[in-house]
Picture (cartoon, rainbow, N blue to C red):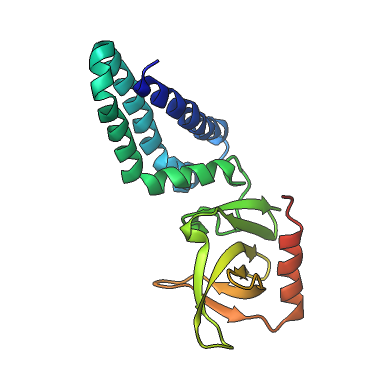
Length: 221
């Protein structure tokens, strides 16, 4: 098996599974949710990027085989570079689909009380949702899980890792749990998603603090 064939085989195995997961999910719920609701889900609008990549894998594999073994040895990098360039150009959409494949919203047909896809962004996916009051986003380990905030004690900017975002649909409140990258100290803050920048607030209510903490601790890992 040539270098190109080995690369394409691994890519098809990985991204083929991802594509099937998304396609099967759409097929499974399309008759049970409103069409506009389905179209608003991030994986629905991004599936074409993955479909195109699978087509490119097949076309590259066919073309490289037709050129023969010797020619393929000299042109193997051409196909691999072409495919990697496509992934790089569509990195955000592909990463979103990876997170969507792990998200509790993927096959959900419940009438949603939460921000769901509207509240989603790069690196996030919902790991737990009771369909009534509480939903919880976790982040992957990408750059999108980092947050820079000014430390009130030192006046300097510190880097934090976002551990979770929790939504309370009953009280219409959102919380963010962060961990200082240097000291590992954890904080729970109110979270206000806004444009152009999100905002955060100190929690003074013990009830709110405990709600967010218990929701986070209650998620199976």
